[in-house]
Length: 157
Image 1 (cartoon, rainbow, N blue to C red):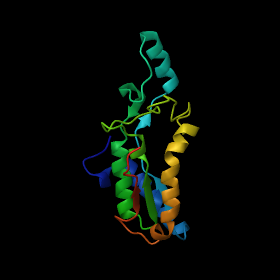
Image 2 (cartoon, rainbow, N blue to C red):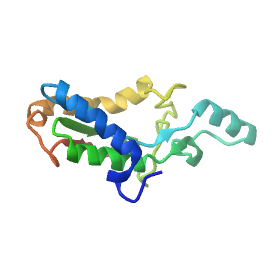
Image 3 (cartoon, rainbow, N blue to C red):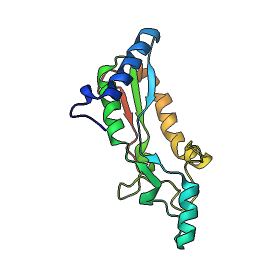
């Protein structure tokens, strides 16, 4: 659980301690992926939906194990307080028109995540434009300070 203030949260304090270590050891920048909702184990969901006669859909409420917002708040606080941190955010790539986190491609229904919750080739293809944007922004990000040290993807699919 997130405490009243992120600065009092034990997990945030532990993360910030780790990033203070990185600040001392890293010459330039530490790049960190912003948190996004944790996908559930899709193979288990697929089995349950088959038993109930339900199809697999790009957005299924049960496919999101946790919303990720408390961790996103911690990462934003790290971005604000870590001089050598650059945060990049891919969450928007997985949102549908209604703003729901999706786990399947809307047309092909192929999975974005594998059993270990790593990106599949379909998920990697979705994220690839963001990585290209990140690489193109590296010269600017190497000098960036808070608010400019956060790179978000705001376009639609």
